[in-house]
Image (cartoon, rainbow, N blue to C red; front, side, top):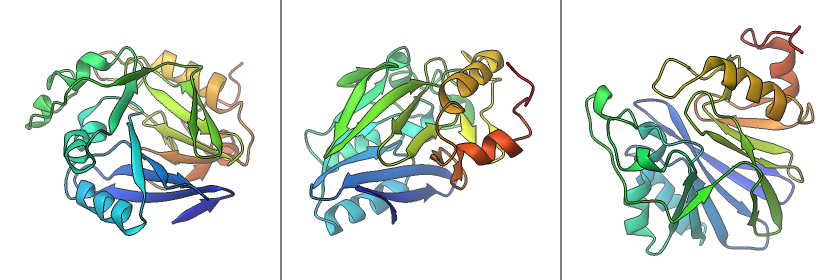
Length: 221
């Protein structure tokens, strides 16, 4: 478990794609979010953690709707009846279409029921005592989002920014230029100490990525 002030965060790594799902909750509240639930056995590990900690899952948040980040939505909806899925506006069709969410090209089929809420850049979300801001990090996917909590000093970036790398931009609906523009405009403008939790790989910080990430042009205006 990672602790950032009032925020508690647990990471679950899915073995096939090494995709990170996150369980978030705050001190003094049983309300929790699951961010980017992926393929089994990750979902069963999330369920065990939620129940073991006595938490209530209020929402399943998706940074984007590629299959490895949303494959666990239906399993968690069944385990936690009434839990809503919050997905990026502009990618809602990908939940219903195995070709669009890239599961079919990888040889399996993942679809979910429609999202109960569609999120867009600029939205403000509340988890317990903490406020979160939704950021535009589209480019890896058509409408990808990041979730930033200033008070905790944490940002969840999905597949936009990794430790030492950035997201692929060779998928349908991707744009390398838009991805880089959004990283510079909406992520690298955050405080250096902000901890970055990515969709794959280890945590990093905004400052470290600004200084050392070889995919980011230091002379970019």
